[in-house]
Image: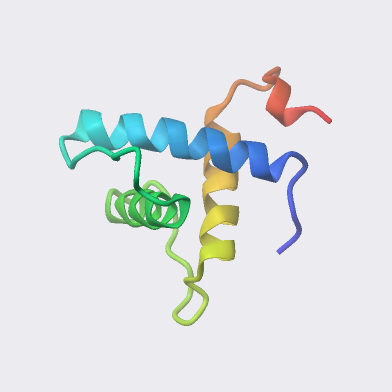
Length: 87
């Protein structure tokens, strides 16, 4: 698993977009007090459930790997000329 350029910023954007997706889907929404780890886990599991991303292998479903999957997911959703994809 090689780290993406701007991976931290991509994860932050994935959390933002994933939160909107959760709310639109009617699953729920995040509170200001929810930790980043909880948000990452919830978004990852919802995207796997909706078959928008492939699940990680058993034993590999930890926070760093989930962050990487979310970064990959959002990088495919953004337009090619988006600033987060450059660098």
